[in-house]
Image (cartoon, rainbow, N blue to C red):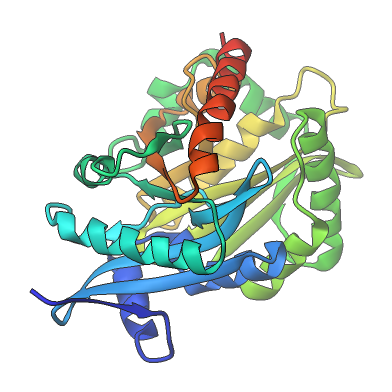
Length: 341
């Protein structure tokens, strides 16, 4: 068989879009590529792998850093960041992808390749290269075909969760979709406060401006939960119609509300109802640490979510990185284990 690689161009872009709709996600689209390049100034390296005339892989890579060390990373800052392979049994596909990645890393003086897959067979093929470990992470996913809206409310939810959701309705709060720049500023204010409260770094406001310019109301939903002048929070989600999947992406929370209010519960429930009304089958609650004791993991589990684990592996392209990285990884793992114990 003849394998050949093509960098993304104006001709094969049709192939990219087709396979993305069949096997990809919102984060494999070329619109998201535009967001990553505009909002984060990432340098992209997209290429396609063909076996004879058959497209067998989509490979979205970027120059990104781990602790200040630059490498080649598959889809950074994305909820789904895996390469797409159509034939998982063909180990030669992985060989050609890694060879191309090594070539890119060598030309751009990058120290490692971080490659991700959801498939265990593809993971086994990558393991032939004796990769270095990377922290396990994944997504919490709700299947609405298995758990419908009524079943979630009546059988999955605890009495306490139903009480907190009803409280917003009983107290006169309403939720609305927003798309004006002024509403985005309100959303961003509480988003930024929320991220800083949990010691996380918020994305810049320009990122949300880019989202508003790029996506229509059929591709992105932003909501605010409010009563009069009080904003309880907001939620931003992406819609990917080819896979009937909605992705929860950003949560905006008013941390000064009385403790009797839990806006995240109401916002997630509204998210589920909207997905159900639109006929979507999958609700993705976003990236979540692989720790059952983590509060975010536990909250999403209360909605009926199942954990979808990914496999990320690092192939060093520098001897110094190969020696130094295990020290960083062990310290990181100990810190996370202590945090979630």
